[in-house]
Length: 170
Image 1 (cartoon, helix red, strand yellow):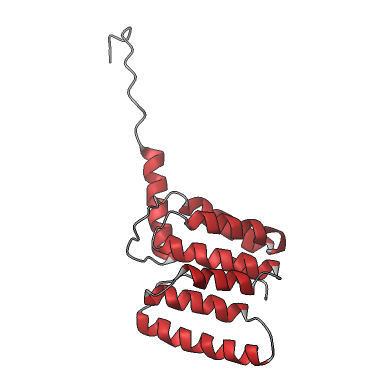
Image 2 (cartoon, rainbow, N blue to C red; image 1 turned 90 degrees about the vertical axis):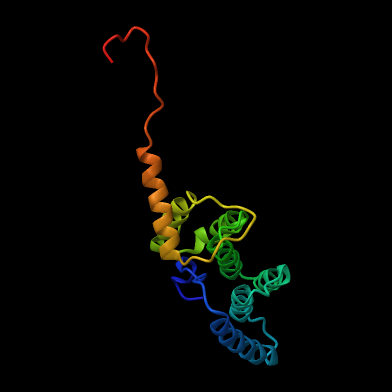
């Protein structure tokens, strides 16, 4: 895996037609690799992403991606990060379980720039309220804007009023 892969965002929403094209490419890639007797982590991750955006994703897609990556720390980290990003794009509660696991695996092998970018991104995105019901999908730019607005609003909330009975002037 080339440097920089662990710092990218892979969960930009896509239309079902785009997801079907990605699925076709992933299936072709998987077929080529299987003939050589190899696991194809990239193909498994593309299938995971395609199925997610087609609305047919299952926990088995995630399990298969993780299984394909089990021998490679970078690939395992990427599988966790991608799945966490997909969940976060729909504001689902377990997103940070996967993002944190992926970051923990990735941190020792990330470039310094990727490490800082992902750390800052995750710190800001934690401001978004997550739940158990999927929200409409948002891309990274929209999620970052929402998180930044929440962060600014939290910083500007008025302090709780404290009444001081000895203060007769205000």
